[in-house]
Image (tube, rainbow, N blue to C red; front, side):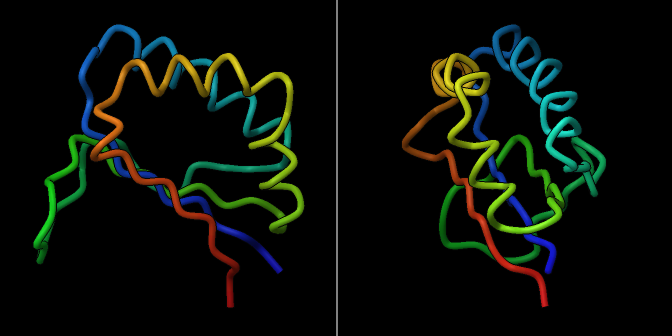
Amino acid sequence: MPAYLIVEHRIADPDKFQECSGTVRPMIANYGGRLLTKGGTHKVLETDHFLPDRVAVFEFPDMTTLNTWYSSPQYKPLLKLRQSATDMSKDVMIAIDGA
């Protein structure tokens, strides 16, 4: 069953964020994941919380693969880079199983 990674970011440092996202996408592809959405095209219809600068949805073959990527030694430095590039009080990453 596929698994999905949903991310919402409030970007604090655009240069660092671009560096991270340019490296993360090919890495996700190496784990069989793919980006399902086009960056910068989201429209918030309802919210009581922050308005994200970026929203993305990635599909992975399954939750095990998603978790393996997230926990991988290759992603660890990029995780720290992403966290330094975003407002962590408003950053959201959700992993969810497909139906």
